[in-house]
Structures are given as C-alpha cells and as structure tokens.
Image (cartoon, rainbow, N blue to C red; front, side, top):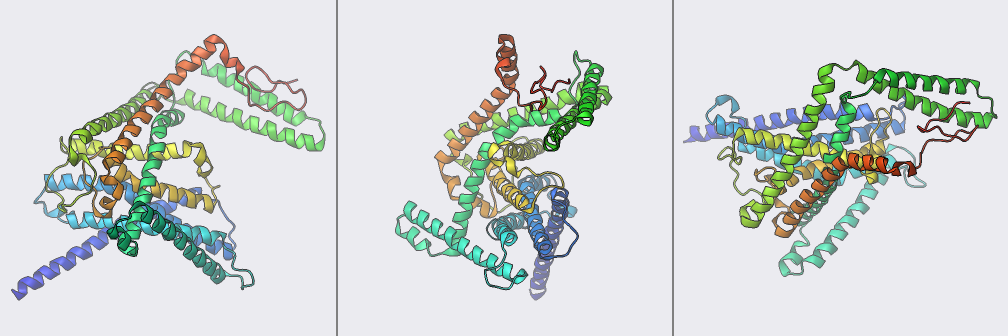
Length: 492
C-alpha cells in the first residue's frame, strides 16, 4: 500500500509539473508574438536611457503581458473544444495523455485570474505610471513616480469598491446579500468581473455586427477586384498627368512665404493621394488572372457564408432558449473532459464552430476600430503612443475575455463554460440572454442589408441627379479658388 501511495503521489507530481511546463510554453509563445506586434506599432523613441525610457519600457512589458493574456482568452475556447474531440477520438492514445481535464480547467482558471490582474491592476498601473511625475515637493525619480502610482491605484480601488458596494446594496436587500458585502474575495471580485464581462458582451454586441458588414469593405481593399469594362491603362495615364500638373504647380508657385508653405502642404497631400491611387491601379494591372477573377469572388462568398451561418445559428439558439432550459449558458458543473461530444456532427461541426469564433473575433476588432467613438485608438505603424497602446490592450482584453461568453450565449458552441467563467451572475437570467440573441440577429441582419443595398441607393441617386447635391471636401485652390469636376484643383 505504501508503494502504491508513493506511486500515486509521484504521478500527481509529474502531472502537475507537466501542466506547469505546458502552460509556461503556451504563454511564452503568446508573449513573444505579442511583443513583436506591439513593437511594430509603438512609436520609435530615442536611444537615451533616461527616466521616461525606463517608464516606457516597463509599460511596454505590462502591455505585452496583457496582450498575451488576451490571446490566451481568444484561443481558450477553441483549444478546449478541439481537445475534447481529440480525447473522444483517441481515448487510449499514449501521446495525448497530457491533454486532460486538469490541464483544460487549469488554463481556464489561469486566463480568468490573469484577466482580472491585467484589467484591475496592471493596466491602471501602466497608465498612472506613464502620467505620474511625483508629488509636489518630493525628490523626482522612479521611486517618486511609483509612490504616486500606488496612491492613485489605492484611491481608484476604493472608488470602484465603493461603487460596487452601493450598487450591490441597492440591488439585493436580503440578509444573505448584505452579509456577502463584507466578503472581498468570494463576492467583490467575481461580481466585479461579472459586470465587466457584461460590459464586454455589450461592446461585442455593438462591434461584431458592424465588423461583419465592414469585413467586406476591408477585404475589398486588401484584394484585387475583378476588372470589368475598365481601361486601367487610361486611368493610370490620367493619374500620371494629374501628378505631373500638381508637381509643376508646386515647383512654379510664386506666393508669399506663409501662403506658399500652406499651399505647398495642400499640394503635397494631394500628390500623396494621387500616388496612392496610382499604386493601387498598378497593383490591379499587375495582378494575375486568378487573383482578379477567382480569389476576390471566393473570399466574398466565404465572408457571406460565414455571416449567414452565424445568423442562422443564433436564430436556432433563440428557438432552443424558448423550448429548452438546458440551452442557458449557466456554466459547467461536470469537470469531465473527453466524456461526451457537444457537437452533433462531431469533429466537422467542432471545426466549423472554431472558424466562426475566430471570424467573430476578427469582425469585432474591425468593428471596434470602425466605430467613431474608438477611431482615436486605431494603431499606426511606428507612430502609436504608449497611452494609445494601453487603451488598445484594455479594449482587446475586454473583447477577448467576453468572446467565450458571447460564443456560448449565442449558441455558436454548446461547450459549457469552465472555471470562473461560468460564475457570471447574468448568464442565468433568461431575459438578458434571450434579448442578447435577438439584438445580435436583428442588428447583424440590418447591417448586412444596409451594406448590400448601399450600392443600389448610390445608383438611384445618380439616376435622379441627387448625387450632385453632395458637397466636395477637397481643398480649394488658394490662387483661383476653383475645383475641377472630379474634385481635383484646376491647373492654370
């Protein structure tokens, strides 16, 4: 018996060490990828090793950690689904014994813990650390800035906890709820993260339908459109003539010094726009036949199919919610992984669910940066400040943390939420879940209808002559004040 007990303890020890190593390797890969992504967009600074450089470097590491956690939250549910199907397909395979329920649950709990840590501690610390200068009268330096940052974090924590305490006391007046108000670890943090997940779900509800319709425009800009009844050589020749005319005006302008600088700036902007148009036309001309005539229609058809399948699955989930209580995303109580398949058609449906999840995540990010409220957070290559990067990391963390919840709420997958993700209070409210599904289906349908009918509306406006009522936003010519018919300045 003693030898059996030792063997069991050794097996448990080796299993825990193996899980720690796997978690570390997965997070290390995500961290490295996140670091390269952030440094690609981060504004290049001087090489001087001063105080601000140290602060920026620390904030960069914290943002990289947050973005890695966001990546883990995105891959968490797909990894769990495919692991469950692999264990069902190869239950006795020796080489996949490391892929067990303990590892999956550990990953869910770690992502939940790190999401809380990044959202409530690391990102506020990075922002306050960047903005801090030290208290008045104190000696300047890193220590003074750290002290000010911790004081600001303490005041922020008091403010948030006070708001949560008052809100909880107003909503729940029973004796059990009043006693739980004094439990920080078991009540405050899960309740607070549940509120954040609800906000993230609402943000996804706004961004995803917009992103699903915006994806067609984005892919249309990245791919080469088919050339139908167009003479690209003639368009390139006209663009070339306009560029030469603007260049001659820029070289031969004889105005006052101040007026000349302003006029030259406007002409340079127009020349850059014309060069971008010329580059796009040249790229369309050099593209191969299969890229112009085959790739673009296939990609558009894939996007339309993915969006249609998503809406149909949400519609079916609405019917399930009305007739079956088990469709509610209340979270998993059974800790078994690999016991039963949650997909009706097995591995094929699981792969389809994973593709739809990634498609919804990409669409939500595209829709997030397409909204006017968040346009200022759009990252630019080698020209993004650390404050903007912090805002982007927080936004992506909120979106990615709410992605598993949204996928389960919309019925994209039947995989029950594991770990602390299943403890969200609002997941058990039938009216909230049903309203969420209805809003997603209706708003997505309206966005798609608006997207595909916009071309028809433009043609009707042109046929009625109403398109001429639209005012041009092109700058006027400081010398003549006239604009040509196509919006470009006339040459004298």
